[in-house]
Amino acid sequence: MKKKITIIAAVLALVLVLSLALVACNEYKWNKLAPGESNADVISNGGYAVKQGKYLYYVNGFDGTDADNTFGVPVKQAILRSEVTEENGTLTVDNSTTQVVVPKTVLYSSSVKDGGIAVFGEWIYYATPNYDKDKTGTASTTDIDFMRTKTDGSVTQKIAKISGRDTRYLFTPNRILYVSGTSVNYIDFSGMKTNKSIDNGKGAKSGTLIQNVSGTVLWSMDDPGERIFYVESVTGADSYKQYNNLCSIKWDGSDKKVLATEDTFLEGEDDPAKSVLKVFKFTLVNMLVEENDVTLYYTKTHRNGSSDTSDGFFCAKASNIKETEYRMTTQSVSSVYPLGYGEGALLTVSSNVYKFDKPTTEQTTDEGKLEDRLIVSGSPTICYADKDAKKIYYTSSSVTGLACISYDLTKLDNQAIVFGEGIKTDWLNLDFIGTNLFFFATDDSNYVHCIDVTKPIYGQLDEDGEQVKTAYVGIPIEEDEDAE
Image (cartoon, rainbow, N blue to C red; front, side):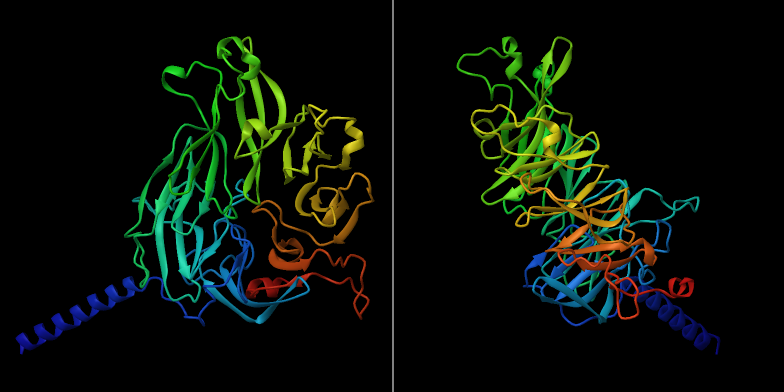
């Protein structure tokens, strides 16, 4: 009898162990949705709303940095999927089709404006805070997980964990690139199996792509050349010299190019040591992907005795820095909104936005009278430019909501308000799909709203005499509904 009881107990114990193992293996189990449209074009990777075919993938709202991030729990800062239709450029989200596809909290950082989520083929890629506890039971406040989930929610994989919630990162179809100090590192997940959930990054490999980086690294998911642009500090025997290298390299680490270096602007037999006015240090500021090339915006300095002297703010094509470079201004520029190599840029100088064009062949800089180039004042943040209409859309501390104004210096007009609702601006850059803005509405518990900005609603009243509102999209949670 005792033997039988012992056998039964052993069997029950085995069943329990197997059950626990099964639960562990299904840590990322979720409701499978209808198949996505993995072969469709993707629009707006790298923000918090991405369109692939008839589906919109987006962050539901902002919940905060300390919300429960157990898989299956998050809803408000999770990733949703909704069907979307388009008519004359205006997107309409069908909320009746909305479902949670990634029940994890998307990483929030007030200091990182790019990154967001991305969709490649059948996968959604995202970063999420890691709250694993150490031996003392203290939850991490610095770690993040890079993860991916199939667009139908059927498989979820943890690709890697890194430290630093303010880390800049870029998702690519085969790698995640991220900045760490003066290096750009990579995580190559092309070796991971794709048919099952993985919670330990099995199959992924990591390494260093670039070292000795100085200043800002520039990249874009829209770049068909798949290149990173960066400034490389000079090391070794030449480290005492007063120059640096403007470089680019492909996402996979191949085809490194030095775009400009010590002798780029020298002539003939010029001696760099005696031609300090032609030997420069570069600082990258912004880039714009254009047809067949990338336009770079940057500053330059040269050595003057024991200190560096500014040469101004410049623009050039990455394919030939020396021959295409032009100086836009000698003013101190705090931010730039690129318009293109031939069109110049909108530059912020002393809290005002000015339009600077490409200089004519007779000019060395497009300076002129600064006041004649003023577009808008009051520390605006430009979030979209309609180049056909020559109009910019922007937020400002002096405006509630979104405003617009012409940047055509021959047809300047007054500021107009597109809508007057509060916008959360301390997370990712405001996200546009075509002319459709998706934003976190501070007047609606930081849920996502959308509007076609070419169709202003400010001052329009509905049938009840109330101000027309932007469209809510997503899934509300109970406590927010109760609060309202």
